[in-house]
Image (cartoon, rainbow, N blue to C red):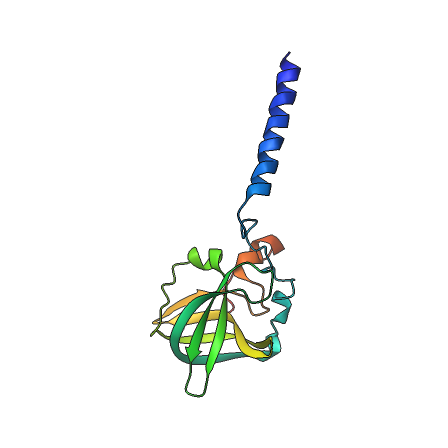
Length: 159
């Protein structure tokens, strides 16, 4: 009898677990998933040879899906003295967990890799500095902070 109850409890637990996976809303899943992994097509766009630092003013912040099929991310538009450039920060879930109250009108310094996405220039941010605060998003090789724990590497600033 006990064995039968244990088997039924196990089957019920498996059924509940499977139904949660099937019924999960779009975008639900393991953090760092949905195209935001360091070794995915988007992550491989980062090029350490194109890292630069630009300063300017944030004109807007918005959600973005950088490549079709990816989870939602956050980007900002940065107006410098010579251009307005799209700066990709990271997945929305990660930015929501950070204590970074970025907003339009903020003067910031961005360090990141200048890339092309769909023939449009963009910067994959390594870090954002504002008023002495630093939001670190990636290391110098482009490994995202949100994926670093899975690679067995320490999460340190690239400064």
